Length: 413
Image 1 (cartoon, rainbow, N blue to C red):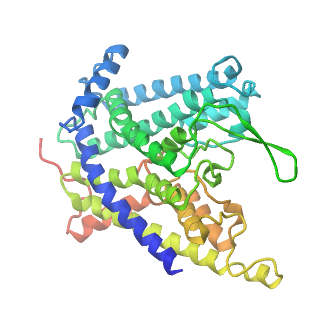
Image 2 (image 1 turned 90 degrees about the vertical axis):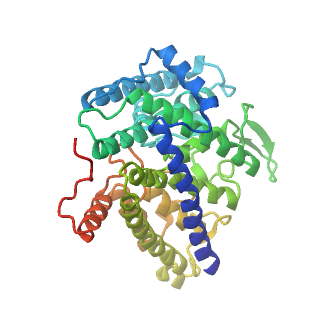
């Protein structure tokens, strides 16, 4: 138990230590301020603008911003759907997997990944080719996450801007989020995952002899590259059916810790960015404190219940002092409870244990957080980071500072 509590404390400390410098960098990126990476990313950004004919200097009002977002995502939905249907004639399909059928399964998957929901009604290793995993699902993991973060920045600008009407340029926000933030973080994280044992190849599936003398086919694939953005983008759609419980996606306790850290990293940094862009960092601290308070309460409830086990099953000799059924022995109760609480607080969807195997009270925590839409850390387009807890935190902040007007302070125009 002491080691698990130390894990929880280490996690929160590491999160805050990493999120703060990332928030400073993110603020500069979206404010178009100079960064140390300008010589690397600026040519890529300008090249994308030239190829696509984008005028990144044109400011948009909310109607133009919303229209661009809708068109962009509908195009992404169509591309993901077509790639799935015709994957049997596309390259990088060594197992000769047929096109995704029936059609509504392909549509369901396309809509799911477009909306950053990443609901999976299929088994990835038997349904999707390498090309579909890379060109459709992984790419959409980047773009749906970039869309959500772009809208979050637009919302922050709308609350903190000094002049009314314009909230930025959608195309510029998506490009800068992808090129300057998500892509470099994903490359770095993917290399770390490969070092930990996550596979990354385009090899055909491997057939091995089992100890009983039978044959078993081991799935291969470009897993690390998709795993990185799956977590950093708060997506959740895994390469394998077992998601982060699969040893090829999450092989070690260290990879488990880093995967949990990556889920909260950008959402926590976004809260700091809000305080910086509002010119009052205490507002970001108030939001973050509320999120941490809710998260810690949920985590301890889940952990205590799973650590105690189910007394009814224990009396029947079917359960021990802890409830390990449906959990990985590599991660234990602490690593499983922490992951389950993190992923449902962020409305992510990645899992390293089976939530239906949790005790009644322990399973209530992820269920409750899913019902609340991700009550803690999140950076999703549906409610972004503006949930009830954020509104509550901001109202408490304003009242405690003697302000009856709860609008964001701004200079008079």
